[in-house]
Image (cartoon, rainbow, N blue to C red; front, side):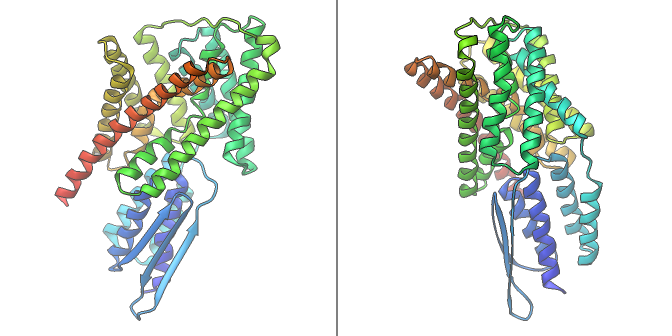
Length: 404
């Protein structure tokens, strides 16, 4: 057996999983399973920007391989296909060269959306979630246009491999500028709703989900690393929108922001549209896309139901997150695929993008105590979502251990 080629196969699989946005525990577990399938014991260490494997060959010589994980996006189609391939390799245990060719074929056959479809995804997210946050139909059209701006800016910055922090600042600033300017000219009813709906594109939903799942699986370093990224992204969003607010202060001023309270059925349609957009941005295809969107709509309807029954925003988010996590775990077992796509899309409508925006807005208005209160509320909502996800993940992990 060529230990180097086998280890290279396992590390390459882990590398591509990490590049697709997989959780740390999934990267490490996949590498372990592939090497153990061939009778090799190993030590694996992975963090969001590096994966390394060490083992002892049959002749007693140590072998170690390490791959750095560079700039990458979120590709849930790739994640699902690689997870399926790893199961196939562990079950069949082919020659290493054959397994490597399977990996190359899987990567080459991976489906991806065209640039035009990705821009459409940005438009749908802004259009759909603007209505959820109280925008009028005119605001939704503006939000769709602003989503296109984010798409153009982020695509350009990604090609330049620019720092994500500064890319987020630039995208949020250039997106908010036309909203504030249009509101000052009377062409936009609710700039707040349009901006918040569009900012959902930049809210790091996959990072939040993966950080919670890493922590529950004991990968505390990776979980904290991702949480820091979440806070930096939220700060970048606030800085970008604050810059746009200052640049247009003479035109926008303190124009009143009118919002609309839409019925539940209209919000269901809006969440459906927004989640379809996110499925495109996260490269989800086929039946998986339909199931992911259904989970997002159902979770939001449950959130509205709990609110209508008198529960506070924290309890409503907690119960909605529990449902989203349960839905994701059940779908993962029925379809024998990762739970990540279902969990990410189902929880996206509840992510506190509005809290980040209003905290920034209140702070700019000089209402510091109110801004602090809104910031704490935002953290509380994020905490409620995290607790719901952790609760369900913990239960299913315990069940899996008992079965094992």
